[in-house]
Amino acid sequence: MNVTGAFYGLLAFGIFATHDAVIKYLGGAYSPFQVVFFATLFSFPLVTLMLMQDKTEGNLRPIHPWWTALRTLCSTLNAICVFYAFTVLPLAQVYAILFAMPLLITVLSIPILGEKVGIHRWFAVLVGLIGVIVVLRPGQTELGLGHAAALSSACLGSVASIIVRKVGREERSVVMMIYPMVSNFVVMGSLMIFTYQPMPLPDLAGVGAIALLGFTAGLLLVFAYRASEAAIVAPMQYSQILWATFFGYMFFDEHLDGATVLGAGIIIASGLYILFRESRGGRSENTPVLRNRSRASSAISFRVSTLLRRQRGDGDEG
Image 1 (cartoon, rainbow, N blue to C red):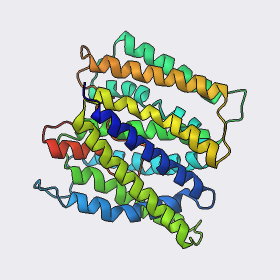
Image 2: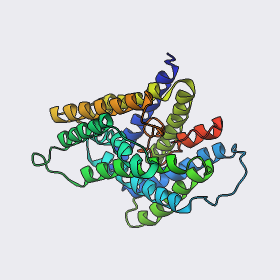
Image 3: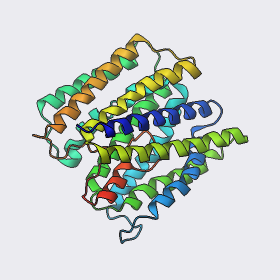
């Protein structure tokens, strides 16, 4: 078993967690619209340099305009939701909710991909949803906009990911990457007008760090998936809960409660079981969770999956 990919994956998700901690820090002073706008602005040169290497012929007109439009809408709304959630909720709690994405992708794969989901994966989905309820503790804690934003981010990210799996074989990588970024730039720039706060140089550097960290982590994920099978790399995403616990305790005076630990454990176990079932083959023809190689909560970075597909040229996207 090649563990090189696991190492790269651990490093990538550690950098992603640092990226999210910077978002949380800046979110205490600036609106999500402003942070996303400037992070997208600083991401453009990095992603543009990468896309210049795309030698595939074509234009920027999408082959599937409605799917592309829906994915762009989901990605834009997801950027707002996930940035806001990181700002107002403990990092570990946000991650626990976002870890429900494999469950949602499994469900969405039925109507969108025509995937057949057997009793084992349905059971894993139900168990994972129980874990989400344990984390949220409805009736025991006051649920606010932050919880709604985190749940919305998980749903929107799942829809965006499953659409990539649906049309990614036919759409150019540049189309899949550039439309959400342009949408973030235009929409966030328009909304930022109402909430803009002048940013001193250190905070601008922090936004630049968000762009650089997201880009670097994305490249490391590419290396990870090129070095090892998806079944080895994908579980590494759950290491983010450890980084979240560390950053939350060290910098934001956050402490894990028992319900979050228990709920996160249930969600992670169900997600790992779905990965295990898909890696074994059988009923799963599309393996939508294994093929979801990009981190949807990093809404301003490039799609790892589309870059892998362009490099390999084998139609392997998701």
